[in-house]
Image 1 (cartoon, rainbow, N blue to C red):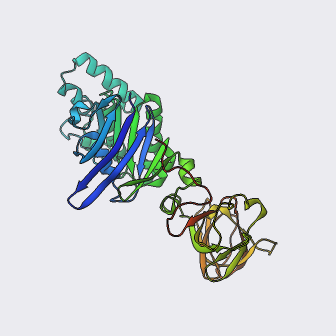
Image 2 (cartoon, one colour):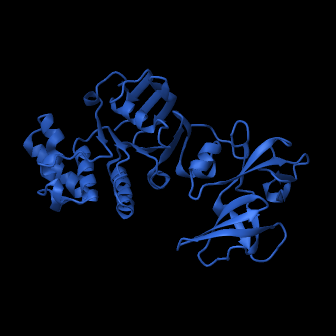
Image 3 (cartoon, one colour):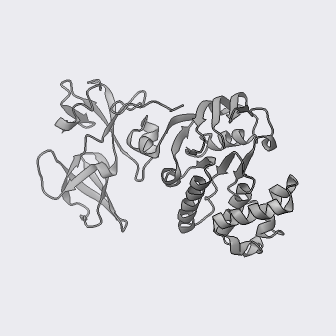
Length: 370
């Protein structure tokens, strides 16, 4: 078991900088997720940790050892890819045993490790089957089992659930997290799926443009986004954004289009450091807006534009002036298109971002925890 340290990591492909001076410490035993859209540098970062890509600058430490120039075989890591890479002519047991045979492990030890891994993954009954008779979830378990038997210091997983259907992905998320906790192995997991990241991670490093925008717990990146990108990328439906200005007296948010929203007393301290008269972007999550069918004080009149019934909840798209807000409501709350309602933003949970720098002004956090 070991911690991983990336120190000023740099990787470029011709004119494209895939990793732009990234530094990150992943503590021993942590389940670290690298999350971001395609092309953000997350898979390249993982491949550099694995030794599959040569870095152009910086250092990589696994434990106390500088592995920057070591081959993948010398790094004591095990990798699980998006494609299962299972040998079709071998049984499940033979596939799992393959990396041990490659390093001439005694057969008795191989048998013990394969049986132990199969038991942890609940695939004992599949050991004599060949891959052609396995489901996608079973093949992914075999691929993970092949990594487990090596007993490495670090697990590296590159979008291992992408090829599974929704139900199987949910099941495998649970299995992988349970297994990681049980084994206590430092794990780096790459995904573009925020649900995977939020449900599995101890820490999430949100990446964009080859840079780690924020690294923190799932609660941190959701409730205290460092900047506009993190706020918009995390959450489904995503955060609502509206351009605005804080009045000179600090008592009113003037939304674009001259729509005034009074600052609630409970939110005064939250906006104390926000500069008045400056171009801002209001950010509010769908669950932090309340809807009413009457018109109480501190609520703003709005109109229902679209309603999406999702079973466990409804998502309403409401219009306040020219601005659209998505609102999460219980399944028992519904309203027809065109209905007149009232809305209220929970300003103790809203965010104000600097329109120029995109930084969060109401809930500042450090970029990373290194």
